[in-house]
Length: 522
Ligand code: ADP
Ligand code: MG
Ligand code: MG
Image (cartoon, rainbow, N blue to C red; front, side, top):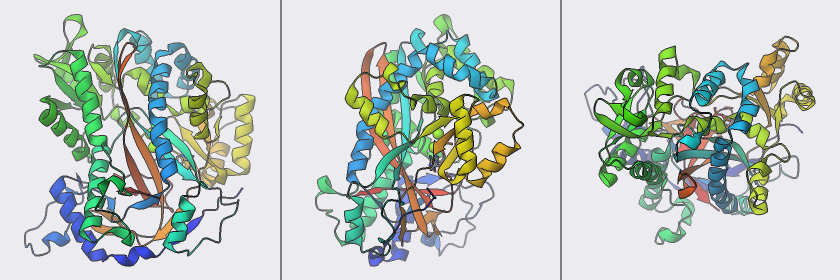
């Protein structure tokens, strides 16, 4: 099978005036906090809105990267992703409670992966499991790409009109395949809710996208509602309330120089405005200096007790430049505060676990409902070990033979870590024979999304920046809260659609490869 995308041309988007949509996008983003910080070198983003200003614009903030149009997405696959989320939430919880399983799978990998070794060390130092921490809060995001096997029957749909493309999109020909599940620092919940607002506004304000947007009746809007911001805040607030100390504060662990800061600040505002809960922000380095454990391992900053620690940092080796940050993570983990995620949830989301779950019989260890098993299996792409087992050796050979069919992944988060195509071959061939580091990687079937050619535009800094063939990735936020076995929240809490040019392998919004989009359900 060659990597051969299916291309859909959608001409009818030309209905709206692009300049007007861009200006209105800027207006909406700036007025509603749909914002990011620019990179330090972008001091000046000239906005159409402020074309008349004579002041140099030192941008304190700039519109978040978004599309001007939503993107068609099959209704069936969208609701499938929502249906899957509560099952994944439970699955992560069960895996996290099974320390024997986590250690059996991850210990061998930790021998060749320093970062994982540090996480395991903390896991083992804190009694190996979350069972001593009765309150568990998960804020996850499970990501999917639609798969369409072009080799089947495509090719002749290029240049079809909108109606035919929409018919095709709704024709059950796409498979929803999971890319990964994020259990730590799942971002863009706030900005994605705001982007739903942006596209509803643009559609209503410019007279309905594509000429058939039934905006009179929001119930039937093809742009689905999206409450990720409020559901994430709700998860944190209910965990705070289960913890049971009303005067306590929530601690956000953040990265130094974070650009996606408004995504976090919206949650902070919602926590205060809706629940009266105060948020304190610290980097891991600051946390090491400022937090301490009190009686019964309660977590404090000065005399301020902390109820919940919400990690928006700590998922990448870059977040631990020295031993100090690891010490901070250990203290936080040891404390009685609710960690989102706790170390076991973090480990349960690693890519090695994802690969092992796809092996026959493993899901059954955690899930008994046959319908749930079936739903989950349907969304698994082919996943293979790259260790020195017979299966790993077979995957190694397959990767060398047809690298375009695969993605090679280390157990890392945050984008930019995967290896694609011919790079897989050169990487594998560069490894000395029997080099143990091969085991730190997994191999995954490459998912082939439909490519959309339309006149959609990706805005960066409020300016038209991306044009061409677009592909999209859907994320569903999961919010899960339990005390011992008493589950009080198990939600599919909203969604994120990220759209990128098909020329880019990875879709980081903050690094400018992809933009936030909304699904237009067909
Ligand atoms: P991370 O945790 O770094 O986000 P991902 O597994 O999500 O790692 O991979 C990053 C990006 O690489 C994804 O957003 C997607 O664009 C692309 N990608 C990952 N796996 C696949 C796959 N199996 N097929 C196609 N693209 C993939
Ligand atoms: Mg990830
Ligand atoms: Mg990802």
